[in-house]
Amino acid sequence: MPADALTSSDSNQPDGLKPRTIAVHAGRPAPSPDAPLNEPITMASMFHAGGDIEYSRFGNPTWTALEDAIGALEGGRCLTFASGLAAVATVLDLVGTGQKVVCPRHAYNGTVGQLADLEARGRITTELVDVTDTDAVVAACAGAALVWLESPTNPALEVADIPTITAAAHEAGAYVVVDNTFATPLLQRPLEDDVDIVVHSATKYLAGHSDVLMGALVTKDDELFGVLSARRGLTGAVPGPFEAWLTLRGLRTLPLRVERAQENAQELVRRLREHPAIDEVRYPGFGGIVSIVLGGGEIAADLLTRKTRLWVHATSLGGVESTLERRRRWKVEPATIPDALVRLSVGVEDVEDLWSDLRRALDGCV
Ligand SMILES: *Cc1c(COP(=O)(O)O)cnc(C)c1O
Image 1 (cartoon, protein in one colour):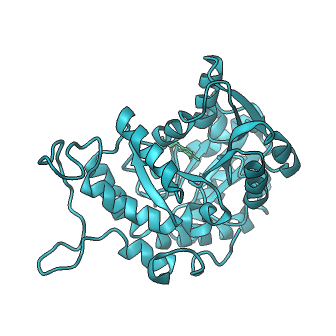
Image 2 (cartoon, rainbow, N blue to C red):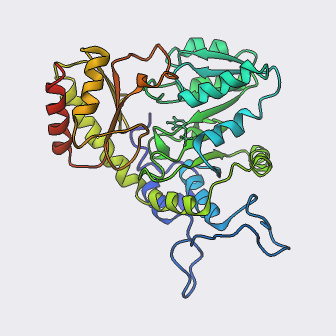
């Protein structure tokens, strides 16, 4: 994990600008007198004939602005989708009948659910792996068409050795996809490790305000970009212009939000490790998501989610507000996730307020 990713400029960023600057400046209309500083919301299904778009399933200037910004941050070309899972489905649709997909057993449950659905219908075969066991993942690459990675995983927070696995997968002739939702392009840029496609649930950190569903794919490979773009036009899993505008507006402050959330998370992890109600604190060392396992089991974990006042009991993550959830309350979550695991999405509030609310609630769960 590149600790200096926020300030590094070794990537193919436009004009060598740093990520914090790109987040503010990418995807803006060309400057001319009286042109708006921000791309407006273009509400249109039809465009006059003879241009590049014609119909809104094929393009929209508001998406393009957002795609330019996400693409510049990840170092590739971006396509946006109606949701993260619409982007995931578009990639999995490329896998040919009977081909093998390798995926972390603790990848996002919607992704594992799509693979299980394809497998149940005889379309593909799936090999689920422990993504922290690099040797096992490398061995699983043999005969695979696609190696799916998610790092860190949701909610187990396991980290994959992306460069080693990508090299092995390419050696075996497989494509590599990384779901970069948790790290964001500020903390990890998988395309720099030769990964073929980056996936985002932009619903989370990229949009960052818990008010929009959005997905994205990013690739450096022009041929792959063309194939994915054609599939999006064919299936129509496109975002709405207002959602694209909201996401771009959120993206402008991504560096501020991620840096503060990470700073808060690191401080909370230090304090949580000392709390007697907690058996285990899982934190990969970066980012704003922390998972804790309560010693008092499922009951104590449910109690915690009811006892906080500031921390919001809600699913999803990556917003400015701190939220928490016992993940196994969803029965689709794998049985290998502890029943007493509570995922914390640390927001940008004052860390002392976050800690006093959490500590008071935890004190009642010992
Ligand atoms: C939420 C999530 C998704 C799914 O995205 P939606 O926008 O909810 O469709 C995919 N991957 C990860 C890691 C997620 O957290």
